[in-house]
Structure formats: C-alpha cells, structure tokens
Length: 199
Image (cartoon, rainbow, N blue to C red; front, side, top):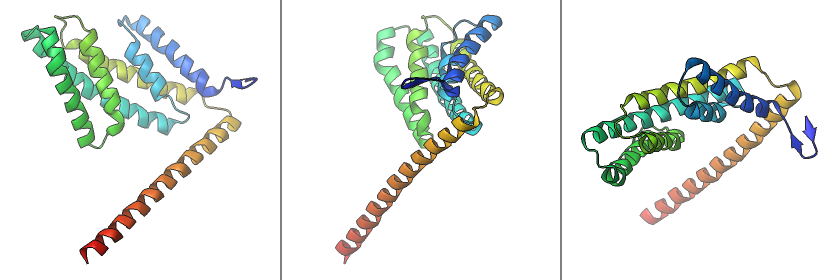
C-alpha cells in the first residue's frame, strides 16, 4: 500500500506484528519484560526464511555470550558489592572479552549484540539479583527469534514485493562483489610491490 512516497510493505507489517506477538506472548506466559524478545524479533525479521534464521542464530549466539559475561559480573557483584569499581574495571574488561571471543570464533556480526546484552543486564539489574536474570535474557532471545521465524512461515510477501526484495538483494551483492574485487586488486598490487622490493 502506497501513500505518496510512503508505503506499508509486508516486511513492515510483519515487523510491527512481531512486537504485538512478543508483548502478547510475554503477557500470557507471565514473563516480566519483553524488551529483549521484541528487539530480537524486529532485528531478526528479514524478507525470507533463510536470512531470518541466519540473523536469528547470530542474535542467539551474541546474546548468549553477552549473558554469560553478565552472569559472571552478577556473580562477582554478589561477593564484591562495589558498583562503581565493578562498572569501571570489570564491565569494560568483560566488554573487551566479548569482542575478543566473538572475533576469535569469526562471528563479528554478533559483537554489538553481545555487548548490548552484557551492558543491558549488568546496568539494569538491581544489586542482589541472581544470575537467573541473565538466563532469562537468553530465553527471551529464543522467543524473539521464534516469533520472527513463525511470522515468516505464515506470512509470505506477495510475488511483486518478493521480486523487488530479490532485486535489492542482488544490487547489494553486486556492491559487495565489487568491494571484494577492489580489495583483491589492492592485495595483488601489494604483493607485486613486495616482490619488486625483495629483488
């Protein structure tokens, strides 16, 4: 549906619906706050199932790594309740470890998710709360990804919109291919220059 330059497409509709589903599901299940689930659902929701599943996996991994780091923080906080010291020393250390770990397993796309989850849990959890809070965030992530996959399963875009999304994806792929080609050219030139210098 178009109104001038503005349009309501299937993906927009599914994104809004994912928020409704998360909030409603949390209400029915009696869970406390749908923040992580709704954000995960919105970020994971893509034009097709394979993209949604891939992004969902990245979110789950990132949130799990961030939640595990947050569990460690909350555990230390339980024995050493000096909030400012922990926020100035332990929190930045854990942020660095999340980055190092995600980069080390070649999952850079989950770095921001992991850090955001770590910071959200550590700075919003009242002192004295148990590590169960961090486990709940992991469950929330699974719920959000589940909602996104469910909506992509039952609501498929009309053929014309699907074609537009494919064209958009192809354009993006061509741009990435050109970037890769430029990088390869630079690498070859550097190798040639090095070989000349060595001679």
